Length: 153
Image (cartoon, rainbow, N blue to C red; front, side):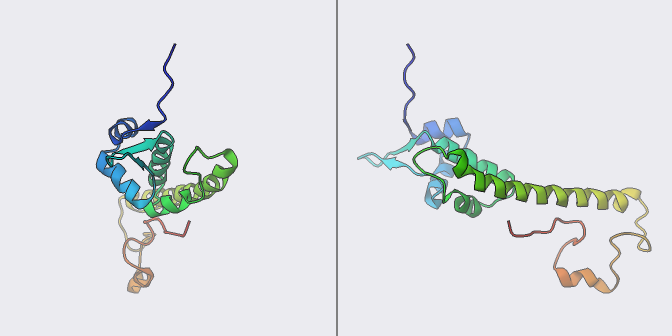
C-alpha cells in the first residue's frame, strides 16, 4: 500500500521539487505569487498546488513576462486548487498572442540579419539599416530595426 501524498510541503521540499532556491520562494511569497500557511512556530507550509503556481511563474518568465505581469495573470486563478480549463483559457489565450508577437519579432530579426549583416557588405548605400540624418533616433534608443518592438500584451 502506498502512502497518500502530503498536502503541505516545507519551503525546503518546495525548493527541491521546484528547482528554485528558498530565497526565491520567499520572494515569490512576498510578491503574492505563492502563499504559505504558518505554523505556531512561524514555519512556512505550502499546499502542493503551489508547485503549479511556481511552474506558472517560471513559464511566464520564459515567454518574457515580468514577475508583476505573472502576478497579474494569476490574480484571477484560484489559490487553493489547480485552475480548471475554463479558468486557464483566458490566460493561455493572452500568452499565445504574446508568443505569436515574439515569434514575429524573432523572424523579423532573423530576416534583417540575413539581409544586411549576414551578407558581409555592410554597405550604407544598400543596407536595410541605413539611417540618414538619424531618422530612427526619434523613435528611441537602440537598433530600432533589429530589436523586437515591445508592445503591450
